[in-house]
Image (cartoon, rainbow over all chains, first blue to last red):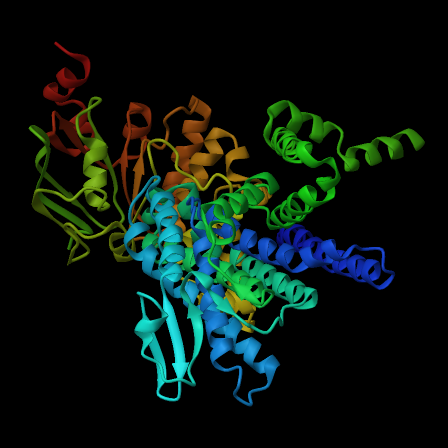
Length: 359
Length: 252
C-alpha cells in the first residue's frame, strides 16, 4: 500500500526533476556557447526574451491546462507587471538603494500588481462559464495597452504628477523629469535583467506551479476543470479556487513582464510586445507544448522564438516555414495516428525491444 | 429525531410542476429507496436535496438543521454527499486523487503551505493518503489507486464515486441509480457493498434505483414517485404490493 503511494509520488517528482534539470542544462550549454564565442550577439539578445516568454507560458499553462479557462490577455498582465516595476525602478533610480534590492522590490511590485489585476478581472468573470473569460481578458489586454499609451507621469520636488492629455498638463517645475511619457513609454530603465536572473525566475515559477498542482489546492483546481458539478458536490469552493489559480497565473505573467521591462532601456506598450498578438503567441506555446505540460511550454517557447531567427537567412520564406513547423508540431502532438505512432516508437519501447532481443 | 425530514417540497420549471408536495422522513441508519417510472422527478428531488436546484416551496431538515435552499457546498458541509446517475468522476486524476479531493474539507492546509512544502504539507498529505487508501480498500480499489479514474471499468467507477462521496464524511449518502448498467453479478456485489457501507460507517442511505431486485433486496423503506407526486410510501414489501404502484410501473 505505501509502496504504491511512493510509486506515484516518484513518477510526478521524477518528471518535475527532469524539467528542472532541463532548464539548468540549457543554461549551462548557453553559458558555454557564450564563453567560447560561438553564439552570435543576435542570439544572445534573444536569451532574456526567451526566459520572459517561457515564464509567461508557464503562467498561462496553469490557467489553460489546469484551470481549463482560456485567457487571451496574458500579454496584458505582462504589460502591467512590466510598467509597474519599471515605474518603481525609475522613481528609485537616484535614491541610494542597492540596485539588487531595488530589482527584487521591483519584481515583487510587478508580480503583485499583475496579481491584483488578475484578481480584479477574475471576480466577475470567473463566475461565468464558457468563453467569457477569453473575451474579457482579450479586451483587458488591449485596454491596458491603450491606457498606458496616453498616461503621462512626471516627478519633481513636489512629488508625482499624473495626466492623461500630454506632458504639459503635468504642470511640473523646471527640474522635474518624465517617468512615463505617454506613447513614448518609460525610457532609461537600467538594464538589470540577465540570462541568469531569467533562468532563476523560470525555476522559481516552475517550483510554484509544480508544488501548487501537486497539493490540495491543485487537486481542487483540477477537480473543477474535470467536473464542476461533482467538485461542488464534494464541497469545493469553485469561485475561490478558480480565482486563486487565475491570480497566480496572472502573477507569474507579471513576473515575466518585470524581466522583460528590465531588459529594455526604452519600454513602449506596442501591439507587437503587449498586444493580443503576444497573447496569442504565448497561447501557441502552451497549446503546442501540450496543455498541462510545463516542460512542453518551455520547449515550445524556446523553439518557436529561436526559429524565426535561425531561418532569417531564408528571407521571404521564413514565415512560411515557421507556419509549416507550427502545423507539423500540432499534428505530431495531437493527431491520433501520430499519438499511436509515438507510443509504439517511443525511446522506452525501442530500448525494451532491444533488451528483449538480447535475452 | 429523523435524520432527514422533507416537507411539502415542490419545484416548477416554467409551466411544468416537476415535483409537488413531496414528503419523506428517513431515520438514522435506514436504507431508504426512492423509486418511480422514468421522468417521475426522482433526480429532481436529489438535486433539490443537494442544492443544485432551489425548491420553490417546502422545507428540508437534516439532523435538526434546516438546509432548505442552501448552496451545494454548504449542504455537503452540513452532511449530504451524493453520486450521480451519469458518473461524474475527475477523469484526468488518479483514483487515489479522486478520493483525496473528497477529503478536501477535512484534511486542510493552506495553499502557501502546499507551494512552500512546509512540514504540515507532508504530515497532512500522509494522513490523506492513509485515509484514502482505507476507503479504497473498502471498495476493493486499492490495487488501482494509481490508475487514471477514466481507465477503470464501469462498475469500479461507480464504486469510486461512492468512495469519493464517503470521503466527505457525510451523515446521509444519496446514491442515484448505483446499479445502472451493471450485470446481475455486479449488482449483487454492489448490494453487499451498500449494506457494508451502512453497517461499517453507520450511514443513512437514500437511493434511487430501477432494479427491483436491488430495491427489494436492501431497502427497508420506500417512497414511490409518479408525475412529481408521492404515490405510496412505507415498508418495502407493502409498497411493492400496492396495486397503485404496480399499475404505475406496469400499466393497466
